[in-house]
Amino acid sequence: MGLYANHVLPRLIDWVLSRSLVSELRATALATAEGEVLEIGFGTGLNLPYYPKGVVKLAALDLAVMLPRKVERRIAAAGIPVEQIQAGGEGLPFESRRFDCVVTTFTLCSIAEVASALREIRRVLKPTGSYLFLEHGRSEDQRVARWQDRLNGIQRLVGGGCNLNRPIDRLVREAGLEITHFERSRLPKTPRILAEHYLGRARVRD
Image 1 (tube, rainbow, N blue to C red):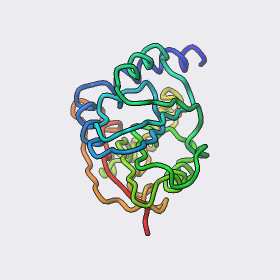
Image 2: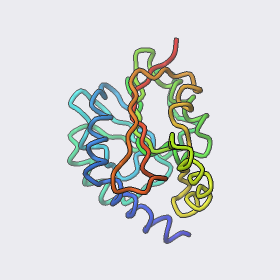
Image 3: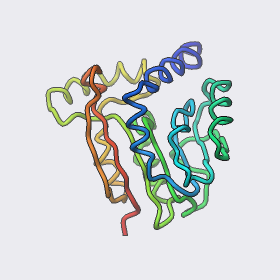
């Protein structure tokens, strides 16, 4: 799995998630980002072109360093200071109430202890901060959801731990975050088990 996980899978993910339809969703999801931002699951830096001018600094956190030369080029072109941090989302190495904004895009599917990671997002957000998310997850169509459950083990194996069937909005709320904006969509020309997307903004619940 070393060759596949370290070289093939990152290139495949970068290619799939750089499609124009996904890029449009990124632009929408990140439109209100501002101040000091933490991005969990930085990956290959595909979000960088879509951060607005109100972002003054980005802490880019990921367990793995993927396609480093491509990432270096994207950081150089971003026009904002970027600090790369190699760590997981379940135990964020930051003080509480530090960030104006936390971002995850296509990340919650692959964090092993996703509930812990969302509680950590709540912890490091300022009381006035926002959590912006763009994720794929469980379908509202029960027939599709059953197929997601059946195929989830295979997807985790070939997709680097990616889960098909997580109910993202419910997980966000259960972590003590209040969703203030929420949209669901289905990507065209995409298998239904992968096409269900959640886009939203949340804040720390009082």
